[in-house]
Length: 339
Ligand code: DON
Image: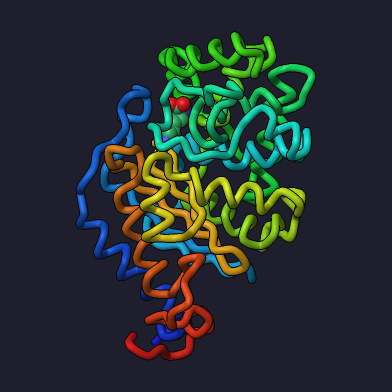
């Protein structure tokens, strides 16, 4: 046996139980072809239905990547949670709350609806609330505001990110509902009058290109109190981490949020590009990518992966029962009961 062969076989031999577990999940759900690729933004329709990646990053900085974890896609609505964090840093909780509420709307992500008494959008995860949140991002002009957004994402992911210009232009050319919402909010004085600049910023933040690994880094950073567990760089002020995670739990999966909280119990955010990022506070972040979406705009395979992780390892926020599998044992490579 050559040195290389023996090295490779020893690597295979020490494959952790957690990696094997994720590989099995990937094989199982790759066969599920339910759902459809989003096509309401023409550029998104180019995604391949078979793309599927699962990445988990622990708060200790261990990275597990299975499948298409280097395939880039646009972050879409997942950006909303992180831009909300930046708006909180820019203005503080009270002011941000006066512009955007934190109530689940029970409506589709693109519903044209505001709270009747306060005229605020329901929460920062639906499009109206996300546009009001983008409006709050400070900067002298559009370029400076976009630079601040990209720098913020870089602190979470540990690598430089860029926007997909064709997707941005495609959204800008077709996003009439978003424009309608922005003007409705302008009518009520809920956003500033730099409306075109803010809409561009919103379309640009949705067009940021990420991988499943980036999504796992984003949520692992939240799970780790706002500090990237690999680079150790702080991405979000500690005071606002809980705010962002709370809104992800109650509103991150849109009109599927209640069922998600009940069945999965991991604060999460999805995007129509096919990504899901899910936080297990104090433990880990999950990033999944598969562009086949259900009717609510959430990734079908991604939901399955998160459901299984939650059930098998007892990762539901309110779980008090002994889990089937022990996460710490799986991560350290120890043998596990019921494996
Ligand atoms: O505003 C839009 O339509 C998109 N840029 C973002 C939508 C999105 O990801 C909704 N998610 N599931």
